[in-house]
Image 1 (cartoon, rainbow over the protein chains, first blue to last red):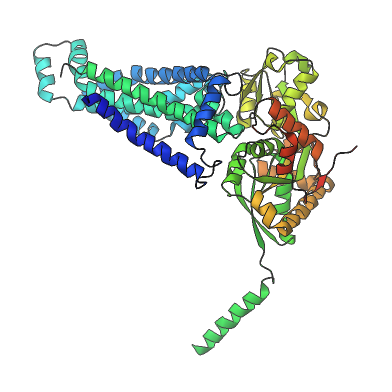
Image 2 (cartoon, each protein chain N blue to C red; image 1 turned 45 degrees about the vertical axis):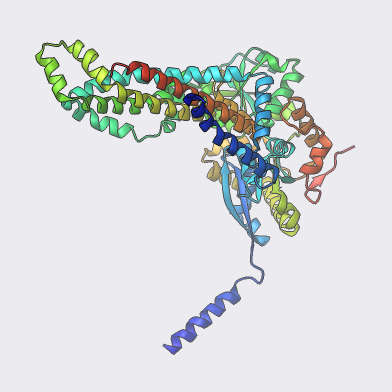
Length: 257
Length: 319
């Protein structure tokens, strides 16, 4: 058996075992169905989500697309702002001192506490959710970028400066590549936080009527625990897939090392 | 030293003798946040009606939605609750929790609201517009569908989305939705804030429609019938009190919703406080839930058997 297949089986085995145990606990009546529906019922609920949609007529694919769009929007905006700012902060200790109180005052505020304000400013459309996700994703990327720059060998930066590297070259050819491993860690955390905040942001209601958080809220409204868990499963799968993609991207980006 | 021991023990004895012979029966109560339909619960607490019946009612949960309250019933975190007939029927039909409805909390008391400057004058003009409901399978969801049907519109003619009541007025004001349907005092609040105008009160959509109920957790209804009856007596007393003492009821409403007196007083005018539960409208509601595909159990009579506590303040339909 090849190493890769063995690795796959090693990951799949425990998953199947847990699912079987969960099913057995349900069948034996130890875990009542209204508390946690067994996997077979969850799959049934998932089937209904795919075939009928929830609310009936709103397809699962539509919900996934809407949520992905919001996550990409929010995390994308966070990348665009946090990486350049992080590189600058990593390079200048004076700037770090100036910005420090702002970062440390805003960072502990949970993104969800911004929901009422976000709705006032941006309404119940996509922009509101994107803003909330941006807030959640921004700080992990920013702080990791700063840490990444600070971890670069000072000698390397000094020699680049002495050898006459332009500011632009210094940022693009020394600081950014040097900080990439740390930035990638930040991105992975940011995507996770992005999903976390997204679902809760969508709980308040979204104008389009699409989104996985909105779908789960609907399942709760009509009190279908099987479809609630099925929705959670879909989010888990998408999150897992995205993380794997980021890791593959990370390996490609860091091949030079 | 000896004297103080004697004194102390006699004090303890005295204290024991002073407490009533039967210890008060404890009941954990749930209701919805700022929902004026549940005024009888607040009046019952404030006026001591529950205490008079030998009950020690502890507020164990204040919820944003009926579905959340049903989860609390499922985990046996509350014994009795004021909540919409809609989410409780849905939960029973989907076997999410076992509850027994024993009395009505109120009838009517919702309204479809449009912007104050909106040109919309009739329900049929909602075609192509976006209307917010507080939740799928809520009483308001049902009322909206019924209003649209009566106006000759298909459900698909209107874009229906869920927005939680606190956000509805903001969403209406900023034109993100064209109308909403909500329970009081949110509908009246939109009016007194100058944002909204009532397009149609729910009393004109379905005259005398039941709205919220008093429901008991299944095992409480089964095992503690005496306590249930005591609670229902207090509930009926509180309901009668609201009808006879509007000013005091308004004060209690202000205290529990945090809204201004004008809004609460106006909103009370749209709510009918009544404690008798009728079977026929519950049956109608169950049929509607089945038709929209919200529930798994589709036989309304089976749902009624599971849902209604026959020993409650239940009235059979008029012929």
